Image 1: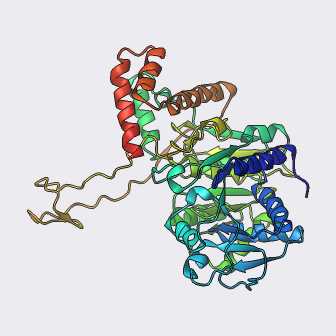
Image 2: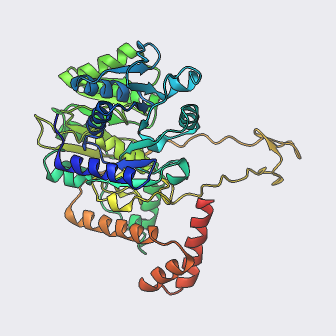
Length: 465
């Protein structure tokens, strides 16, 4: 139950942040760092000093894992979670944000500290709970301090980042499994190079999120058939169809989604842990709060633009295994080649920023205005134009394009190229004024650094607004 040296360093950094006057710091640590273990140790220390502490999360799996770690330390705690026995007298409370939101008038004594797990998900519900408690100091825990709605973490009330090791550092320390990445062959267009139209067309298909490369089942059977595998799919229907395809091929597979009963979810967890099934398919399930130590492989059939989702999906397979020397990733959707995502274990700790942490750097955060396809009026109510009566055509989602081909292993040259891209993002993340952008454009030797700087600076200002 002791802490590793880097965990002790993070604890000292937290106390230093509190002493410096920060009320809402964030501990930024990747999957496998031991954030919950670290938090349980902090809770035990604070309770010994007479403080009251809440651990607040949105997933039952996160709450149950925290409860197990508190029990192992002999910490008395109560539940604020539907269906669990309450203990208002306990100085530690393990709290579901949904249950707390429904019981704002009956939350018991206010805590001295609220620890918020997966704090990048902080929403209005969290703030309502904190307001009902008198806005006590908070401590956020996350591996990705960026949001999917375009807001910065500072705008959500956080005021300091406590940075720790990168994933690659934890792999080097032997605390996480090495990751063997198999993805699309390198495409020049993905690096935005001026190549032939054919290369640009291929890159465009990949970037559009419509391509699945190769036969996922055959590739998995050739390289990972003996390894318990998590398969992330694009939706519930796709997960069920993929599981059925695995079963028709003679493998044991099970699909789980949000409509699955609690008993089915528990069964799936038990079977994948004990070797009762070969593969577990899901869509949005098990992206966070799901830890299987001996998971040997991940198959990604889901396209995403979100670094949060990408990092968390891959993190499921990085737990140190007693059986497998590494975790094999089959990135059939080409996410490892997509700008803003890249190598799942690349160094990113230096990129995090409280003020510019949007998960949608390449998107416009302000929604567009819908116009009528016939008369271009913006007087749209649902799908009907109120000026001319035209009914908007509803576009059906395009099916993924299956391309023949084989995955290739990501090599050192790929990683070096992606490291350079991340460095460019870091340089741009440090620009705070138009003059900074102009200086960066000049240093890069752009033909029109002032014009480029104005475009980038204005885009940053729109996101910040």
